Amino acid sequence: MFSFENLRVYRDSLNFSKSIYKLTKAFPKQETFGITSQLRRAASSVALNIAERSALTKSEFRNFLRRARGSLYECIPILAMALDNKYISGEEYESIYENCDVLARSLSALINSMK
Image 1 (cartoon, rainbow, N blue to C red):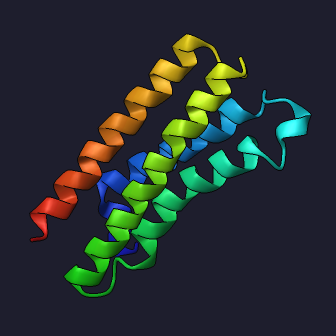
Image 2 (cartoon, rainbow, N blue to C red; image 1 turned 90 degrees about the vertical axis):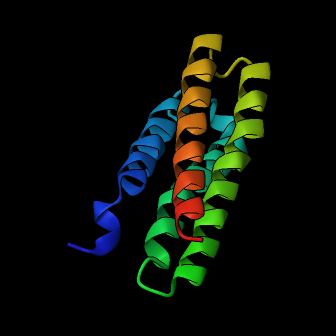
């Protein structure tokens, strides 16, 4: 087992990505290379950034955690666009938004613990 796999924030980011993939399956075909792809890439990037630099120095890992958080923040306006275009319901938006908030807090706590 790799060290990053023990991090709760990593496991939570995988679950977040899984929920985004499930959510975007219902998006219109014309969005395949638009917001569907962009949202999936941003969501996947959270876990990828956590894993990518976990074995390096604390300073480098902290920078990649910040990138992970940035990718998570990127999901928020894309979700708002999906809501505005009625690709998702208000309930779906609120649920995913809450997941983003919890995950962002976890990432911030981990970043702050490494100072």
